[in-house]
Length: 322
Image (tube, rainbow, N blue to C red):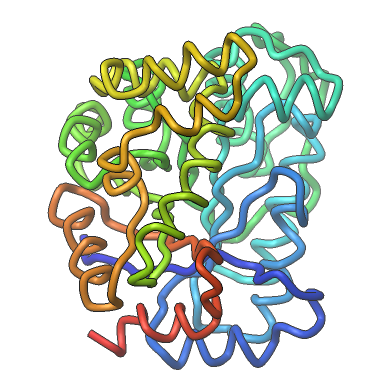
């Protein structure tokens, strides 16, 4: 499988103003645009716009939480964007986190493995247009038929951190979506996905800030690390990856309520592993290491630290600049 180079969208400006940006990014060689869904735009709308503005680019979502839409509505969302971008859409689903699902959406975050698995199974059936009835472990479907199924079935990728979900991504998905890990961590993750069969795609969201102001980048990145890696699912992930010694100081300070000490306890080495920064050339080399270790599609997420211009950063990191 050839490597693909994607850019995370949308940029931090009104959606209707981004057509020229997407066109430029496509001309610079980006093969994919990847959206997400947390506390900004929804996952589908930026891609629907991009489907019309740049009809040659592949579009993906990393990710839609398996909880926040009913199964039938999710199937309709997917089928609709498949019509807008025939053969060019990749669906990413996952459990997300207790913060997004429970704290922000008021939905109990229970049995995330089963919910993700059953949503993937439901979508596999529903997107073909067959009538679906049955009791899954987390929900029951009674006689749903998708009236406008996609002519071409989209790949379904599963967001995965630890072995159970990684194996699920390989066994019942077309691959995995990964994030918050180093290039070297990919070599530990990839075999669990590959156990499900050949030709599995691995999409990695890679946080990148092409700036040589290392102090400013690290200070901002540590705030991001503290915000995310204290969420239970990510904390357990990094314990499994072997970062307990590096992150115990942060976890202990955070639990005690001392946010300042938590930030100070994050080693620079952890920032340098999880965030790509430095000159554009060194950033491109760092991104290449993700591919060398098993990532098939990089979804670069520009972090606007140290006063950088995100669009210029996307230009500097583009496939054309290699």
